[in-house]
Image (cartoon, rainbow, N blue to C red):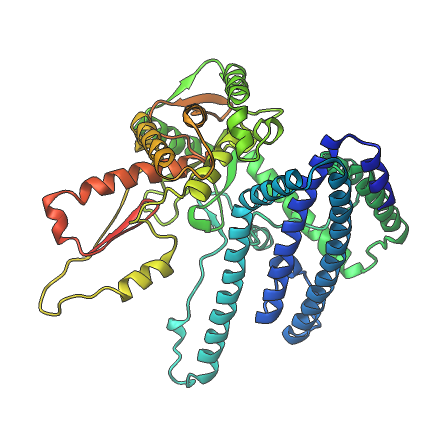
Length: 528
């Protein structure tokens, strides 16, 4: 705390502003996290970050007690952190009041608090969703347990027990042993215990992550102290049985890699989280190229990354005044080292032809941060959501339960989906619809004090995010001639805007009078 006070006293007032904004943001996240932990404690649920692996000798009740004690310990730690944050804020308040008028300072704090709310809006929403999921999961587990204990033994038949699919599917003609299949069934997130641990590499990785933090010096000292204690107290694995298991695991993993390499196989994920799939590499490439041919995706000779990145940088610089109104800076919106997006394919095991679902990894691409900003802007601030769209199946059930039907009439239930949604969205039409909606917002409810130039800047960023339609597959560069970029965070809101427009047109048709209920989840529609 003394170092923090000395740095503030010796710095300019602009640095104190930055520290105030950072500390208010940190206080918001800290309070939300404390509230989340209290809710978990009240509902007797364990957050995922506390679901650590415990020895098998403990029963489930004891494991739960241990995790609850860890939750209470985390609460105490967060309260200590809250006290430190409050001390920093108190000093910053006194420091800034010495340099600013009371009214100026009040306006500044109110503005920063409001910015903090908008910046953390999406994270707060996700945290609430996690809490609801944990509570619902506990309730489902309790209901299943009650059904198992209350059902008579003679009613439960073996063929009524639900069988989950394997976590690994072999579509090749290569044989894998039972030990190898056991490892593959553990899924793509499994990793054996490492033989060695390089503490210096970890120190470098941590430093890269915390370097941007305003309190880097203090954090660096704490991390250095923690790593030194870890190195001094580290205990090597001495359990002979565990060492033998690790050796067998590594041997089996080595055999899997050799078989994949020698037989020209590829390991990928299945669609709908259905585990791992192994198939011949040439079949994987053929299926993906067939999708390219059917959707007007063409190969190009030169990678447009550098030219496109320069265009992105120029538009971001032009749009900075608008970005500042939403709490963004050139560092938060610009990729320092942009990479070309990479495409991979998921195998649809539930389809007879084993077709593919292409996925583009756009993280680190030139417009990834721009797309995330636009996603937050449209969904979180402007709230451009269709009245016919639903968030999940629970909302659909609620709508169906509230539906009142005439028992003397006959009704038809229809369900259908949109084929290759992103590829079939007309970009120019969607941008025109977005522009009109932004102008309507400007005229009707301009809470953010936007002007016509801000709308033009937002549209320039939206057009920019829609133009990043190139990617790498099999060491070649391809470009999409039609539709929205796959893997872009902005493609979802754009498709939602266009589908909302189409649905409104459908409801103007003469046949729309016979539609009792129309609900859509992304690209799946249910109609009565």
